[in-house]
Amino acid sequence: VHCGAGIEAFALSGDELQQRSYPASFRGHFEAGGFEIVQAMDLPGNAHQTAEQAAALLSSPECPSGPTTLVLDGHQVMLQVHESVGHPTELDRVLGMEAAFAGTSFVGLRDRGVFRYGSELVNITADATSAGGLGTFAYDDEGVEAQSCPLIESGILVGFQSSRETAGATGASRSNGTMRAEGWENLPLIRMTNVNLHPHEGSTEDLIAGVDDGIYMATNKSWSIDDKRKTFQFGCEIAWEIKNGRLGRMLKDPRYTGIMPEFWGSCDGIAGPEEWRMWGTPNCGKGQPGQTMRVGHGTSPARFRNVSVGFAQ
Image (cartoon, rainbow, N blue to C red):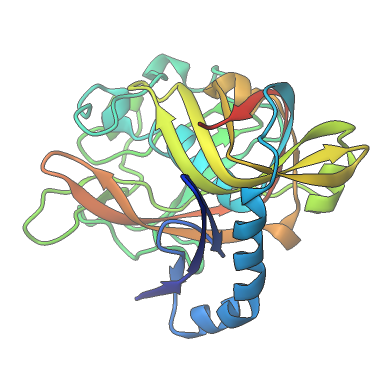
């Protein structure tokens, strides 16, 4: 059972439309649990600020273009993990068995144990036992018990999400239990469970304090990724400039681009456990015919150096 909600505010001036979402965009935030999940969000208490920010964006300057230090909030890090680590480590994509929906993968079997996916701070695990995760279950649809399996350790690619059919390709003796189907009438596919970025230390304020000149972006608005899931562009709802370790002016229509291993390799800060949150994605698509699946991502805000940012027109 999962539960969730969210609010959206829209502001219109002439041909320009701006939006702000709380606590997350695209249907809101979801976790495994009951109505207490919604109550904890305090939607009425956050409605006024959400609307104020949407209106303020109309008169805010555009996000400047060029390479800079980028700090992302936890929600945007969640989508970054989903698209740039979760999908590329699905073993059917790696083996070329899945390509119709969102492409294959830029990593191969030979990369396991040697390919540097990110900096030494980057540790990512696919964990079907995470408390509160939408990708948490007891057994997958091949009868394999739920488990936690490392994907990236200290920046090195160490594992893939597998099935009974594909596990042998990696030399493994068993599947790590990621085969799920949307319903009884669907064939199981390798699907993300809860692909979590491990927290490090400090707060969002600490990440920002370590930036002389940069950008802080929050709340996903758009995404575009190539068919190998290697190059990307993400847009966010809102941003603020960072000057001398402090937030400055609000900026509208921010976006950033990059190449996956270079981007993760530039990560030099991940906030600690106190800012780590389990986010839910109830509508992850895959397959042909398409299937929708619930997946989760535990993330903290993170900082990246020398990232290309700009204005999403």
